[in-house]
Image (tube, rainbow, N blue to C red; front, side, top):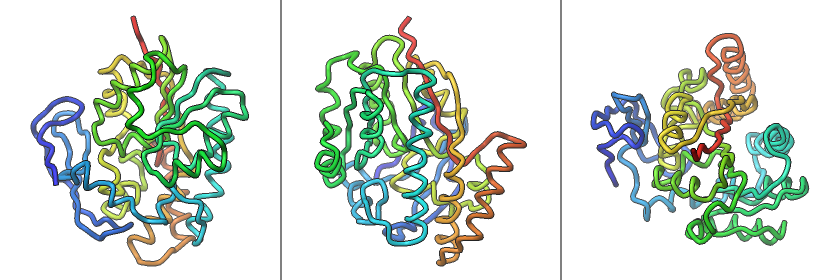
Amino acid sequence: MEILNICPICNGNAIKTILSLEDYFLTNEIFYICECQFCSFKITNPRPSEKELSKYYESDEYRSHSYNSKGSIDQVYKLVRRYTLYNKANFIKEFISKGKLLDIGCGTGEFLNYMKKKKFEVTGIEPNNKARFKAIEKYTLEVFDETELDQFPKASFDLVTLWHVLEHIYDLNQRIIQIKNLLKSNGLLIVAVPNCDSYDAKHYKNYWAAYDAPRHLYHFNTSTLIQLMKIYGFNHIKTKPMFFDSFYVSMLSEKYKTGKSNFLQGFYYGLISDISALFSDKNFSSHVYIFRLNNS
């Protein structure tokens, strides 16, 4: 295990444990969520070493790497994923209608294939071998291992996307530098991450499925993500809620909390989370953020 003593955002050295939880998805090991006392950024700490981390993804049930749809929660996930492809494309079209797109953590390639049909020139990065090969085989996409990121020429892409990926990346700061180098002048970056300030996060606490330790190494809210991106010259343009995430996350959180699916209970708290965000603090379960690189 590796212990982080310095905050990846503000370099503060006061990191306090605030929560303990299990790896409910796979190993049932205990992990801890810590918070920087200067900027409030939350991290999984200690965390597995980079070499150890891969074993926490070794399951056919890991959804972004699989086509399986066995249980009711998985069925909901797959239905929502198909619907959100349309929403993602529409959101992107507000800012750019064509160009070269790099999707980091593209999984089995559904988003890239959808954007290829929308006339974007698409490339993917996916560290998981099985998911990468599925994307190549099923959709004939150009998908590479993450070790290939530095092989692309600088300023190659108009748009880089990370859909629920940034929280998984081991060397957070180095990856953002890589992305900055790959984007053209005034290029766009889209990042979707869970929001640890949402109602469902506060309700479920250590059972909140979107903590997903140790696969999720970082736990963002709006303030910490914007603060991080500003360091590297990214200007925040817009934030958009991901309405459906609260339902899926709450249903999975109910399963972790009670040992049962409790579909209706999860749906109820997902709905309450969205209503709370709509009418009060705007803290949805997940957000999509769009940034523009400021090269001046």
